Figure 1 (cartoon, rainbow, N blue to C red):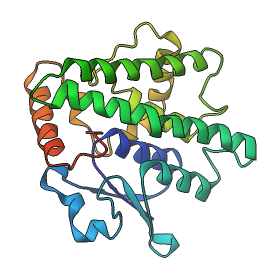
Figure 2 (figure 1 turned 180 degrees about the horizontal axis):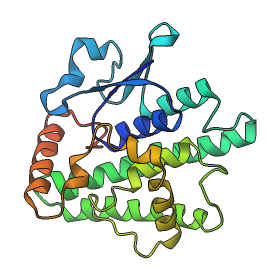
Figure 3 (figure 1 turned 90 degrees about the vertical axis):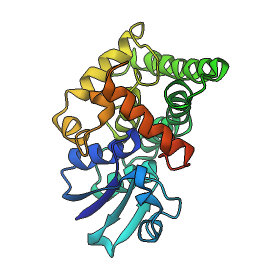
Length: 236
């Protein structure tokens, strides 16, 4: 049994999707980030960085893993699925996983902060992070032109990137001119395990539309967390 400490953010959904894909039994432990539950001594004993997600493998002497990418690798290696065992195949998956961890996540996260959450609109910062997010989307689109998935077969690399890229509208970045990326987004979303994973827990971001009350409430809550330094790598 896996305990998943999480919240409804792209980083959190990476791990819930993987758990669903791998059909691993898990207990969902949703933390209220606005209340600072990720900063409690109990959770800091699991993740000293005080961020979600984190997992505890009850079948492996309560082994704790933090950082979403590390959680994905651990689960893939534990089950022997969603990542090849040969050196080159594993490397391809790791390259695209690192692409998300070092690029897609941080750039989209900062786009969210400056486009959605900061009360003061600093246009050069918005342009910078939306522009870099779009550049990274073009990299994905170019690669996906000749590949069904990012690293051969469907893998944790697809899960990690998809969990973020699917939220592109919230970051204010359009993908209508990226047909291969759109094809991949639709193909991954159609997977039953993915649909279950993004409901564990469901994201208010998915329910919110620009300008409506839900969007305003979600942005206000996220702004509070950003100001308190409690957001999940700006992944709220």
